[in-house]
Image 1 (cartoon, rainbow, N blue to C red):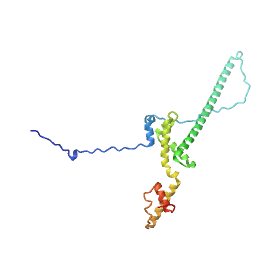
Image 2 (image 1 turned 90 degrees about the vertical axis):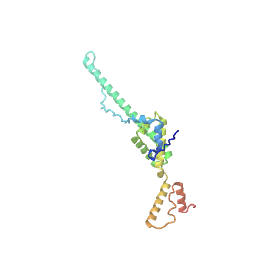
Image 3 (image 1 turned 90 degrees about the horizontal axis):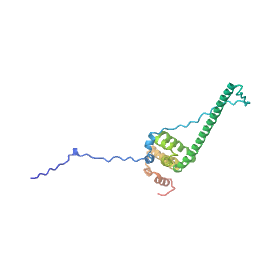
Image 4 (image 1 turned 180 degrees about the vertical axis):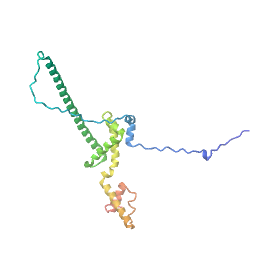
Length: 235
């Protein structure tokens, strides 16, 4: 005789498995992942550029050199040779310092031109007025200062131009969203007008048939309703 045993799971034995929450990566985080910046940023050390100090030497009035006779005054001749060697080393050090100073000035000039071009390219996406485009430069400087991965890409921008181009495009998209209201003065004016209208209705406590016509409307829908409200459009 065979017996069938049926096992039923009790409510206590039943566990629910929730799907993990997927957090969508930002465009800049996707750039970091695509170009494997994580490991590079961990060992990143910011470089600080300092202009070399130019040695200042007093310029003596030109005089005819007096060369001791190497036969009659061998000790004086030896001292004269040492002084000439010291003077030559000093002049070479001055020339080297001047060259370093000129090199740093040229690097700074190139950086300024590169920054100007970069800001102009990003502003094609952001759309700020020319007089406000310096806000993009400030935002980039802050990104370099606060984001170690972005700073690593910036410092290696000439070695890996593709990563730098992708990173700046991602930052441009972020700034476009951030400055969208500032770049569209008409939208800002419309928002200001509707806020004033809402404040007036809240103060008077009067029933207005148009009170709900702007509720929940943004962008193009809000503009159409506003034009209709002020009598320059159609319902």
